[in-house]
Length: 264
Image (tube, rainbow, N blue to C red; front, side, top):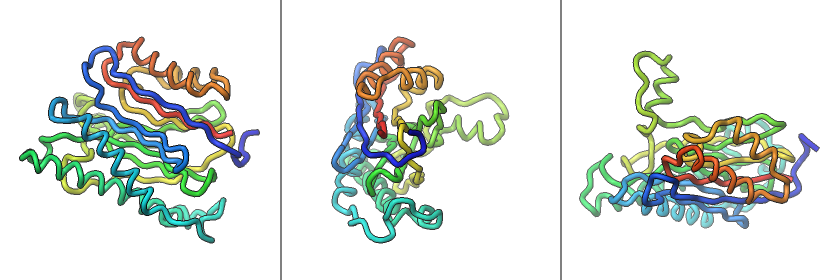
């Protein structure tokens, strides 16, 4: 029944090097107990993009695991809009600090290698955390890895890319479009980074998708919808695999990583 409170959630995910790259710099994590999902798309090639993405995953997970507060009276299902804006009982602040700590760790690794700002390894990150059961999801990101929600057949992009191309779109598309791969905000590039954090509602039959741009650059929204709607409730792993296959079938020009969460 659509619109009802979910009873449970199932997860699936996968990653692939693609058809043109020789190294997979993406990393992902599904922590079913903590209900924390993370996708990171590393940048830096031989400098260590894969190291940056793994470091981000580890640092964010470690911080949230250590500082997750016990649910209190203000974290009961169905918080008011004021509670949501104020950070959903402090959970949004925990997520923001976790991302900042991950950034500091990667920046420190670059400094140890003698690499200046914007010249070392870096990574995007997108995450989803269910800190209070299944009533709401904390969505956070830095860079152009994305989060989506499929509800009632409609796919909604929950994040906005931190890219020069998106800035060009937001400014009215004046002049020639810039390269879509120029990231304006990522972990490891500078000392301070400001992640976007939002709290999203969750309903029965929702499917949340977290992915690197290796998927969204290769697979249309319509195809993503078709794959998710055609996949039986008990075969979420098949949906993740099919999405990766679609990206590779269309050229696979980048590493591709997918995480799915289905609420039932």
